Amino acid sequence: QVQLVESGGGLVQAGGSLRLSCAASGRTFSRYGMGWFRQAPGKEREIVAALSWSGDMTYYTDSVKGRFTISRDNAKNTVYLQMNSLKPEDTAVYFCAADPFTYPARSIRVVADRYNYWGRGTQVTVSS
Image 1: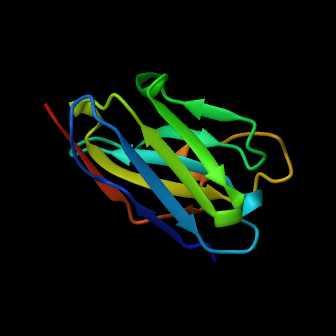
Image 2: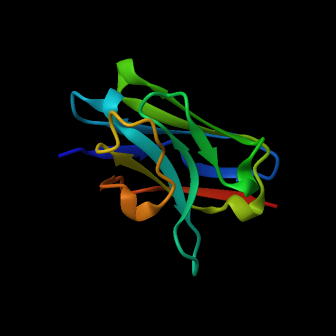
């Protein structure tokens, strides 16, 4: 069983930055593909960014390209989402998710139902 705990959310003005962290349990974190998703009120959950277990493949949804960066520190069992130039439309609950089953294939998951483990989310609110 993999447990994920997000942190780093909060209230920020438009144009500001936040860094989300997701700490994972388990001794094989380095084999997990990781993703960040978000869900705004009244909207479906959408992928924001994904990072392969190997760390050399990334995916970003179009609306965050050039502003957000996903990264991982396997020594700390943690994945990060650096969010810059935040906009009010980035307001949502942000979830991290783990995919332990892609390893050892070199691929990346961008669909929510391909992720087996989820955190409880952290709220990000961007004021205009």
